[in-house]
Length: 219
Image (cartoon, rainbow, N blue to C red; front, side):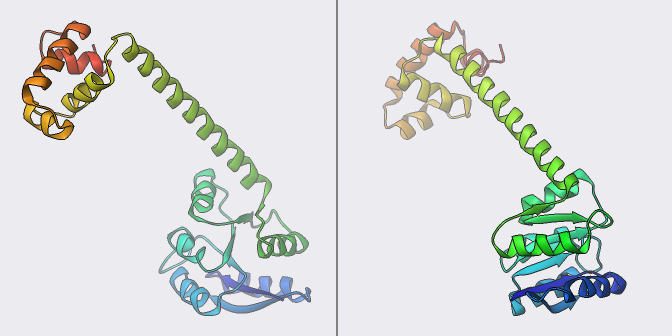
């Protein structure tokens, strides 16, 4: 038997959901709540297999409680809001499913509940589209970040600094004095000054500021 909690501030919606679920012999509604905070308390107490969660509610909305709810139950968001930002935020918050009112029927709702109870996910067509878009954007950002890192690495390689000189210049960029660099790297200040001499020469920098700017790729 799959225990279900309904969290929605609209009594008509809660009644309709109960009616939908009553036809299934493997699903039972074990509790209801009209706001997010009460819903969270009910989930902590009842530990339902699946919680049907609305977004717009008084006291605490769905997005506010989804992460905590997901610690106790599989969350299936049921809402009229199909905004991409909300779908992405709910999924990042821990929701395992997302359905938009008017875009699913009772049989699909039951399939979604059973899927979540079995440890799977379930998304409406809009939810799947948003998920694909978010993943595509993340992949593009990761590629862009990796490309910048490779470029930075190549830029730095051309200076020909040794590993120790790189340690020194990184600390210099972080604003540390010669004495602080010496303490952190367990060197003498004289050794740090020698490293800086070679660093300035390789970076063709006349002073600390130019060295930092050149190493950071800002000059």
